[in-house]
Image (tube, rainbow, N blue to C red; front, top):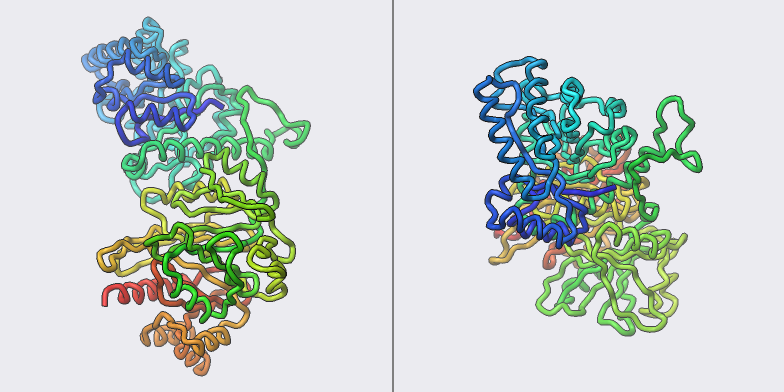
Length: 621
């Protein structure tokens, strides 16, 4: 699959955008007209730079408001078009995007539109230019991709074809299977963009909220499957208008964009394999049908089987050590060659890392996941543009396969064990690899705060590299604003990762992103009592919360009194119950202890505003 991206997706100058696209590995680019108009580079210099970078110049865009106009305006439009065709010749480009008219169309007549498009195609042909006609979702008279294609067929000119844009099609819920009936020689270009499902006018949705494939909710694999079946062989190019992307680091955004196309290519291949056309044998195996566009796939991996460990980095570890001890964790010792500690409770393992931690407040630094094959999982992640994290090891030490997440959290892919043990723990003391076997404490979930400019990138990263499934996102109120929360989890819930786009909280003049690790136990009340006896500083829950809790659930008075006594929070749904408590925050980290009863699969979301408010008060006494 030939990959492309529109320069409008990225921040920076045209030169910076082109360099970033080449670094990310794109085959070609679309030049957005404004990027060229504002650039000090001449068209000839842009052409030469593209050649030096190994980039094709695939599409010049957009040419707006051409069709359905009066004769006088048509004359002016043709003059404008001829100037652009001459410019494209200087650039060495041969395809221009023409959008269906939004602003100046006054005549709703397909015959007239076809006649005017025919004149445009003839003029384009004189200059060796192809016109890709696209139906904008908010076009005045033409807003349906099938309507645009019918006009192309009516004109029947070799230099006029259509452009298929996933956003304009899927935002209107148009059926995509009809693409397969299109003449592939008349599909001149394909653009893809994802988006969250929003209730708003389509123009605003398009201009501000498009995201890269895998970061939204559109069924792009199905869309691409129909495009492939139609016989299209040209570029698949990203056209994403997004306020965040156009403020973010250009090289990083380009890599994220490339990752999204790699992921989409794999997802599209899987859709084709599992959805044979009607009247053909079931897809898959030796009978898989081949299409003119070849779709590459990645090394296949299963979703993680569970958390292997969580790592917290800190300069001064005294508070962390005290907190873990109060929760009931056991200190297992220091690593024999590294300045790190191991603490365990059952199968929940926490590493305290003091290496290169000068002036570092406690923060979550790394997560380990149990996977079937760390080497294969790492190879997949690297093909998805994940940066490699290397750690120095000596003889007889575990070699972890490490990659870096968008928020710089280090992700280590560990060899899973059926009994939940970890062989690497012997590096902290002989026999520890079997310590805690048979007990029930595990890491239940980890909550990571995401910088605003990398939130969507993180969703795609964990989806594509770790096979976690994004759940519907939620917004949680806090005293400093709404917190967008995105749960990523495995099918069985063995791995639960919560990504929060949290407001920046101010503490003593420093910005603090709060994150936490949650541990599941069988008996939370007993765990809380034991922790209290060890002197644990619980997050103090207001009495008003328990009055509201009683009104909502009509709890048994003795049970309600126990919850209040121990600062426990409670939630219940049709499947079960959820008990949990929080510790005070150390640096940017706090801990949560939970007990899941029955089939409860949530996170106590109704209690999140209470937690945010109490933590806010602790930072603003």
